[in-house]
Amino acid sequence: MDAYERIKHELTNAPVLILPDFELPFKLYIDAACSQGLGAALHQRQIVYGEPREGVICYISRQLKYPEARYGATHTECLCLVWALEKLHYYLEGAVFEVYTDCTDLKSLLNMKATNRHMLRWQIAIQEYRGNMTIIYKEGKIHTNADCLSRWPLDNFKSNPAYDPQVAAKIPIHFMEIARRKNFRFSEWAPESGIPDSGDTDSEGT
Image (cartoon, rainbow, N blue to C red):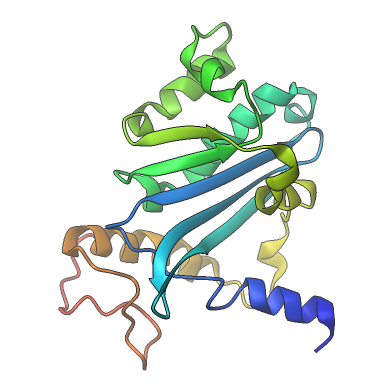
């Protein structure tokens, strides 16, 4: 395995990649690269191998659509936040979390009176998260985890031969909803099946 493949392996496997604990707060790192893409990384601080550390739950990114590529820097960052909240809804709904951004104007922009339909729609979209969400500025030169995702967005994950759209559609809904109802911690897994073992066979909500 060459150095590049080894880095990819390390970033997408334990102990860097961890499973979410819904009893703990999350950290959402977002970044938008104008005319390029959107990127976000969901982190959480947990006890891993007996020591407190911050691990990654998932990475997401996408290319900007043609009209979006004409947005200004602050509006693109706002778009990124709304997009990330929508994509990570099953993790963040009802959870306490911090949003880290290198855009100093994002917080004030979301609090000011909407001057166009985009801003109004975005403010409505994040309304349900406001009570549990704290926006924190992080200097751009150290905001590297989300920055690299926005500069090299990945839109072709469905071309992966291992991608199964039916499985991809069901897993987040099924297991996230069970986890929330049962207070289940995703750090416990059924070893044979590779899926969370909720301790019963209740199929409500599937």
